[in-house]
Length: 225
Image 1 (spheres, one colour):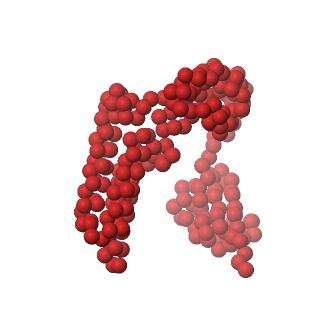
Image 2 (cartoon, helix red, strand yellow):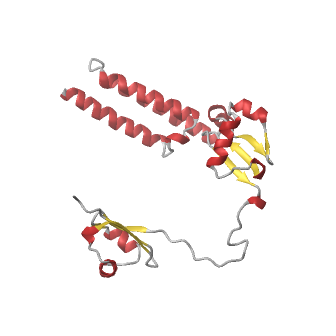
Image 3 (spheres, one colour):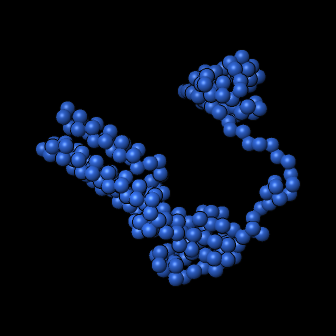
């Protein structure tokens, strides 16, 4: 049992290393070659993890080999456009100027229902408003709406708006995060004054965020019992 535990821990660490080496791409955004590598690595790790009769090195070497191949392909894809298109594919236009392109739907095996679903996920319910809908190499559909159907921006209406400020977590689960508190431009006395005005203690706070201009968001801990 102890040997099985050690093997599982080693293989787990190897898998974490492999995923980190592949980059920070989300699983739903994997390109075809990366998806194949993820499946292969998981399968290669499961065999030595379950069968203690197989040497651990026999499981690690194939994983590292597949990882090395993926890294080599990634470098080649970055350097050579043709190589990138061969292994990763290229974007395909599905809608152009409000007109669905049936030939491209058939080529990519995307049904009309799936296309409409992707458009709805992008906040589009009227195909006529779509200037371009593009099937990306990772399977997502990028939607670009005609400018005349887009809501006006502050620049369009010449409105003055305040710059956005990033809220920083200054208290998390009853613990003051001193580095974030300092980064927000505030200090401990300021925090204590704000908490007193809100009628709570640090121990009562589940989450407290603050911006540099002093805007707060407070979520209190739920009472136990």
